[in-house]
Structure formats: C-alpha cells, structure tokens
Image 1 (cartoon, rainbow, N blue to C red):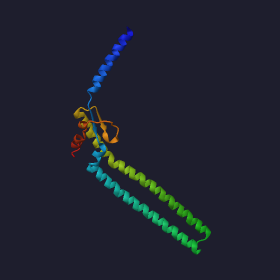
Image 2: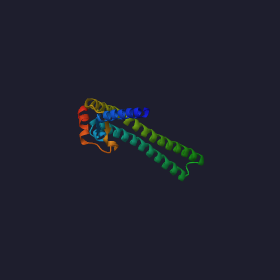
Image 3: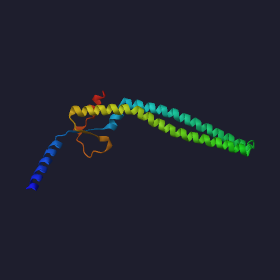
Image 4: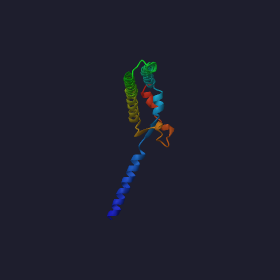
Length: 170
C-alpha cells in the first residue's frame, strides 16, 4: 500500500512537472550575426586596428634598430676595431635588446587583449540587457545562442534577433 501511494505521488509530480515544462517558451538569437551588424563593434575593431598598427610600428622600429646595431657590431668585428672583450660587451647589449623586444611583443599582445575587452564589454552588456528585456517582455523561459551550434533544432519562429535589434535601436 505504501509503495502504491509513493508511486501515485511520483506520477502526480511527473505530470505536474511535464505540464510546467511544456508551458515554457523558448527562443534563440544569433549573437555572431547580431554583433557583426552593430556599428559599435565595427568602431571597436577599427580602434583596435589603429592601436595594433601603432604597436607593430614601434616593434618594427625596435627590430630595425637591433638589426642595425647587430650589423654594425659585425662590421666592427670584421674590421678588427673591436677587442674580444668589447665584442662580448656588444653581444651582451644585443641580447638585452632581443629580450626587450620579446618582452615588448608579450606586452603588446596583453595590451591589445585588454583594450579589446575594455571596448567590447560595454557592447556585450548592452546586448545582454536587450536580450533580457526581450525575454521578459516576450515571456521566454530560455533564449539560446544559435551561433554556438549548441542547438540541434530551432523553429524559425522562435528567433528573437529582430526584437533584440529593435531594442538596440538597429
């Protein structure tokens, strides 16, 4: 009798849960496409490109300077105007310059990554706010990102991208 009562309660709970789940509304948005259409993202990419070019030019100048110093040291060594001790000193200086260039390259990558995060985070926050507003207004329980290839099937009528674009004023 106790097993029968437990089984009946379990069936009632499962029925209630399936009714609750079937009443939920799902939607999806293609965030990659959405972001690619936002002028703010294009502007952020342009700013990053400018910064990247400036840093690359600086790095190229450092490399050109190192190459000139290396060529000069080789020329002096070939002419015999550098003593072996001076050659060692010059080589140590050149190695230090090489290490500075390597450090600059690492710093450059970190600086570009930080700048990208600084520029894109407000845009991501804006999009997430718009998605949340669409979800709340439309009564959606879940909105998935269709660009991540996580969905195996999606009904075209559940795409809320146009509503998110409207919220963003696009």
